[in-house]
Length: 348
Image (tube, rainbow, N blue to C red):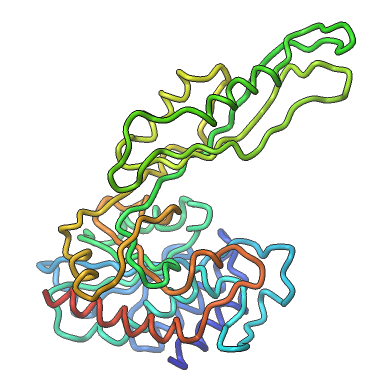
């Protein structure tokens, strides 16, 4: 426990913004090396396999990320000064996802040499917060074939068996400029208003038994150059949270047929995902009385083409907020529960 806390303090004290995780990758690599393991590194991704890796056995991946977002402007404490107060460890990345990182590392170190029906691979990856191409997307093709995974994100150690996808749309309504006093032109704002009403009221026909409806929310809008000029362009952004009953491409086709504006997705790769309730990862959670839930947020599971659950230390409600913290007791309980879970799963 003390070792996990000290490692987390080092990670907090070392800035690790997405694409700038070199120093924390060094810390994690050195920690594993000092444990007489044989860690490997690809850019800022660090991983280690069971020393007695047997290609005839299936593989369980333990994954979390060590990059962070940039600190919110409203921090009242130094985000890079790990501080323990009232049973809480404060600092940027403490909750998302440093607590899961150190807990998974301790779990691997405690059980990698125990008899098991599975090979274990521990991978602490980069660029998760920006869905970067040099994170898990780069690492997965270099790893042995993975059969299933536990992804460490702050879920209060509940098991997410599905998560919504994400698609961000940049939309542009076009009109014709003119003088406002003479009622000239074609106001792009009014064209956009029709489309905004559509986004607000439209319901996709199919609803997911697990996730419910596809959610769409307009989150940004910009138009106009000055008060007396009819705007010829109005730009707005839509946050779309897909479910498992539509592909992102299908959702995009339906949206484009419903609005006048030009619609451009920033990416279509962040798909919704779900694991069968019959999978032994889920059955292990049920046997341990771990609550199951559907996650509204995305993770590196979108990169995985194998079954995975999202389960980790901390609370997602604290992620990306000022004065981020994790309870010391959460880390202690997280390590215990991870060890029990992995051992039970790997000796099925």
